[in-house]
Length: 324
Image (cartoon, rainbow, N blue to C red; front, top):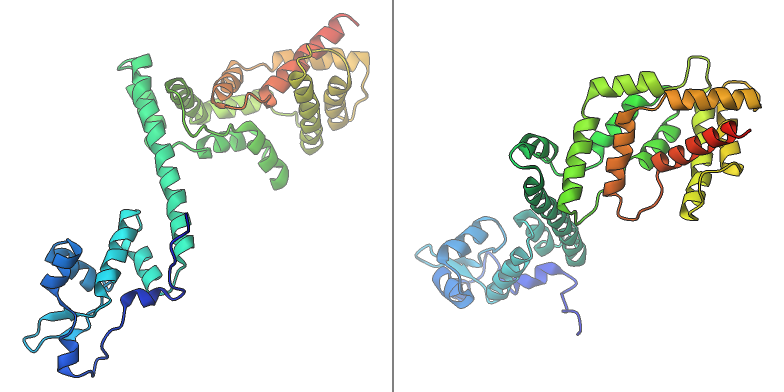
């Protein structure tokens, strides 16, 4: 099917209009407001509204002062109604008709906005269905989380509160991007509930401060060096997880240990590994484990995340120390 042919100049949709100083007989040609409304199948009120909005200019006035519209007004009015039927707001319609915006671009923007609205409606539907899983007690939990359209902002803010403030912006952004799950566009009721629970956890500032104190690097640790090294270790552990390999000694674990040793200006020795295993176990936080469990429910791709990679490495470290 061929695409509709639109004029290069959208103002051509107006059709020929009489000049302001045209003879009275010429200005009276075309349509009265009632005739135009009847021809278009709309009310006189609609024609008057579009005319007053500047979308349907008059060609002139009759001797009695009544509005007259030129020969192109009918197609112009139909074009306005088509654009409005596609959801375009009046300002966007005006920009197209006045040649200030391209039709294709305006429709592409409207399509993106429609897609956003559809995602929001799917989340609302999933949230309503989630009440069947929680009962009335879930009203506060789900209502608080979904008072605004779901998004990553609350989760990102949570991570920025628990990470060291002295991290460079690029490193902070990379960690946050890896830690915050991409929300599904068509969530299940279970995922809506998981998001609500994750939202509640991430909104707890006191919990974030406690997690930061428990899991953060010590005062003598080079946090930048540690987190950069951990990023590489998590990537290697992710490869092991994708391959279905159990936690074991190897390159991923060596990289994990080296990240800590280098940041603490220590050497990777058997004693250091035993101490690191003890500290890693002692820094376990049930709230962070819950975060990663809920985040996994939201991930549609099933890809390993930082939480699963860290767990794999912690188990590998504990096993290697135990059997060393």
